[in-house]
Length: 385
Image (tube, rainbow, N blue to C red):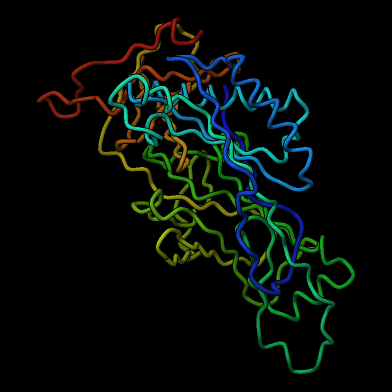
C-alpha cells in the first residue's frame, strides 16, 4: 500500500530568539505533463527533469514540493489515485537520479486544482501534470548563549521550538536546568499525523461505539532524564483551518482496544484566518492522542467474498481520517459521515494490505427501512489484486 509519510517533528531544540522568514521559491516551477489516464513519464518530460537536475547543482540548500493533478474527466476517487500515481512516478525518478529523500515533499489533489479550464482537450492537457516547486531551506535562528540565572527570576516561561510547527512552553528555570550542557537533546517531541504513522503506531483507532477519528496527531514527548516537570507546561502545533473547520479536537486516552475522551487533559484551540493553533498541557514524558470523532450518521456494509479479510478501514488524507469497520456475522460494518476523497483499505489475514478506490461510500443511500442500505458492497478477489 502506497501511503504518503511525512514526519512533522524533529529532535533539534531551539530557544525562541525571533521570527524566521517563511521559505520562498528560488526557481520557476516545472510542469511535468502526462497523457490521458497515464502516469508514465514521457521522453519530453524526462528531458525537463534532467534539466532540473542540472539547475539544482547550482543550489546548495533547497526543498522540492511535488503536487499531482488531473483533468476533470472521471470521478473524484479515480482522479485522486491517478494524481498520486503521477507524483510517485516523478518522486521515484528523482530518487533514482540521486535526489535525497530529505529534500522531497509530495502531495496530490486529483482534479480539484486545475491550472486551466477543462472546456477542451488543449486546456485539459495542461491539467494532467505534476508541478515541481523549489523552495529555499527554512533558516532557523540559532539560540544565544544561555543567560545568567539570577535569583527570583523563575516566574516566567520560554518558548522552545522542537520541530516544524511544534513548540513547547515551559518555565525558564526548568528549561535552563534540564538543558544546561545539552541544549539540542534535552527535549524531543514527535508529532505523527499521516496514515502510515498512525497505523504503524499500534494506537487504538475507534471508540467503544465503533466510531473513527479525524486525527490532529499522536504526540510523543520526552524530557531529559525521563522525569516529570515541576511546573505547568504545554505543547502547541498548528493545523490547516479549512481542513479542520468542523473538527472538535480533544485529548484521548487508550482504554483496552478503544480510545475515549481524556477528561483530565484540556485542549485549547486558537483560530486565525488560515490555521488553528492547538495547545495541550504536558507534565511528563509520554504519548498524547489528539483527534476529533469522525461522526457516525451513515452505515456501510461490506461482505467478504474472498474469506481473506482481517480488517477494513475507510480512510482519507488532508485531514487524516481513519474509520475502522466492525465485523458482525458475515459482514463488515462501518459507521461514518461523508468523507471527502475516501478510500477503502483492506488488511488481509496474511498481513498484506490493499487499497480499493472504486467503491464510493459517499454514494450509499438508505432504504425506507431504518438502518438498511439500498445495496451491499461485496469485496471480491478482483479488488485485492
